[in-house]
Length: 157
Image (cartoon, rainbow, N blue to C red; front, side):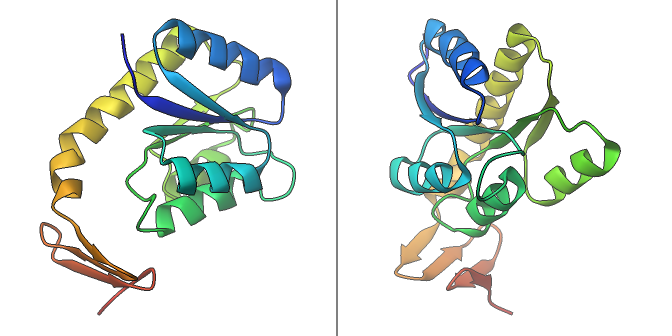
């Protein structure tokens, strides 16, 4: 059994319930959000281990949520898997460009979804050592392994 926390963001109640059920059955703690705004709040405040994110959301869309999460030093390490009905090549490319770690199209197999979540969490565990070495002081972030300094969310040059 797992104890990781997964934030599921979708505006369709049936999808939220299907994913919540399948994740909870496998021991994951599940947070649910129906809007981009609530996804950003939960992502920043609760720091889930993974975010499963729909693109088509009311208010802030999923691409912008992904971009904001990946631009924030506090949340950039959280894997984001896009789960969406938008399966065009351009949509997939844009999602990956915004920082998504994987892209899954609807309709989807719950078994395959769980496998892809597990794979993303394994990759995250492999990079946790690097994340743990990151130094943070206010708006200053120093990543010695990448030889990178971030000030107020921007990489210092």
